[in-house]
Length: 76
Image 1: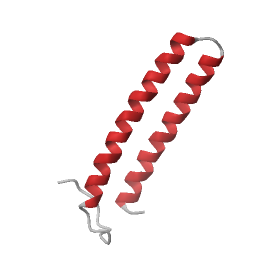
Image 2: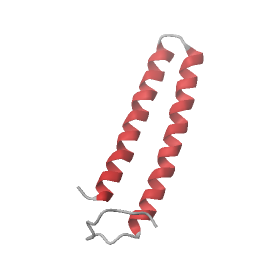
Image 3: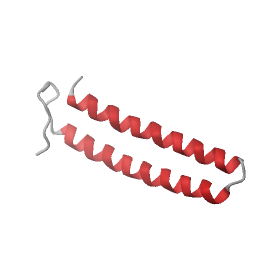
């Protein structure tokens, strides 16, 4: 697996985690616990926003790389 593929895997994994947190918030909301549900939704929204920022930064870093370069990655 290339460094770019590894990076994108972990960013995608974070988004799956955000979806799981949001689903947990949905369960809390369904059971009537509105305060904790909105706190969980706020936490998931912050995590998703940070994930989008990380994805945009990663895409800019990956654009600068040679697509055929499989050497270990280092951000300069």
